[in-house]
Length: 249
Image 1: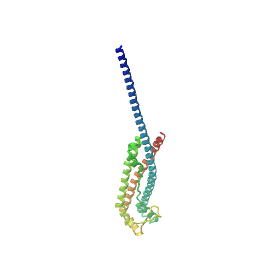
Image 2: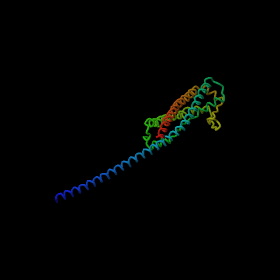
Image 3: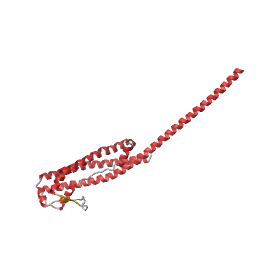
Image 4: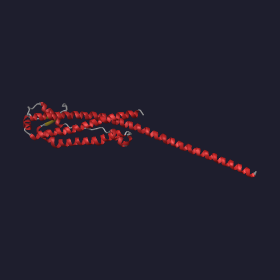
């Protein structure tokens, strides 16, 4: 009898321990599940915040590019006028035409140096936050190529034209023209030339070559500017689709 009583007590004791262990395991499982849920919520929150920041940055880049497009299109229009002016000046010199006000008006364009200054605030913000923030691989690569490669290359063309102007074309232009700054003039410059200087210019074959070189430099920059404009339009198209996609999520 004593043996059975002790055996029964042992079973009861083991039963309590089993219940305690089950309770402890249950508590641990609840804690682990709670931690996992908290981590998941934290991850969802971070992803949501990242997407909101991505959307904000992409909208700023889109706004920047819209302004850039207006600016580069204005430069393109000006360079196209410069190209036409060079052709007219070359024809007047080649045909030894009578000096007219049109000649001076066209010559005033030779001192104009269009300078493209893109707004990089959105892209610089993206770089500071990490360009990997852009979830769309195609968009991320396209934007990076536009700002890091295409614009850098275009600026080099502008710088080369400016150095050509300072070292080559400007000294030759000043041999014959006196340039006056005039706010009432469309391009802010008035190119004055006397009849004597005009006659000398007509006999100066080297000046005709310089004029042709000015035209060539302008055409090169104009060609690159058109590439920039096309790239901006491409970025805007991709951005519009991506922004709409992010807003609908």
